Structure formats: C-alpha cells, structure tokens
Length: 129
Image (cartoon, rainbow, N blue to C red; front, top):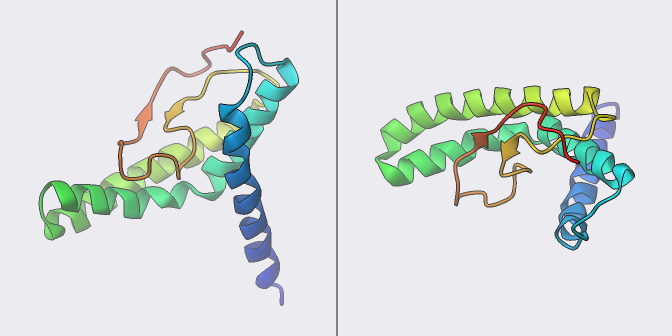
C-alpha cells in the first residue's frame, strides 16, 4: 500500500498540470505577480516530476533522424542529459519561486510539442516584469 501513495500523488499532479496549460494560453498580456509565481511553481513541479519524458522523446527523435541503433544509444545519452537539465531547472524553479522569472526551458513543460522540437535552454534568472 505504501508504493501506491507516491504513484497516486504523481498521477494526480500530472492530471492537474495537464489542465494548467489551457489557462496559461488564455492569460492576459499583463499577468499579476501571484499568477507569475504560481506558473513558475507549476513549471518547476512539472519539470521535476516529468523530466524522464526526455529519454523516450530523444530516442524517438534521433531514431527518426538517423537509425534505431544510433537513436537507442545517442538518444538515451541526450535524453539523460536533458532529463538532468529539466530536473535541475525544475528544482531551481521550486527553490526560487518567489522571484518571478521567465521560463528557462523550451518547451516549458515536458509534454508540450513532444516530438516537434528539441529541448532548449535559455538565460537563467531573466526577470519577468
């Protein structure tokens, strides 16, 4: 029974975060401070809990670009690097949530534009005024 609780918490957090993207798209241009730090907290939670999505994403993308053998090896390595990057940036977002900053990773959440774009990293601590 103890192993069901963490899995249930992750599942509920994932469902909650999947509904949060619709509200992000409909925000007015000038967002309040509270909504900025709220979105930063959700960004951090999604990057920490779902960072492992990067491994299959990179395996599939590199396999489609070249071949399965290179995709399985190179994609696994690149996915591990991007998983570590998302996990680190998500942790950083959670620690510094009171400071409203722009997103560092693109796409912002691991599930957005899943097989369309590679994960990119932008400036750290670019303030969002």
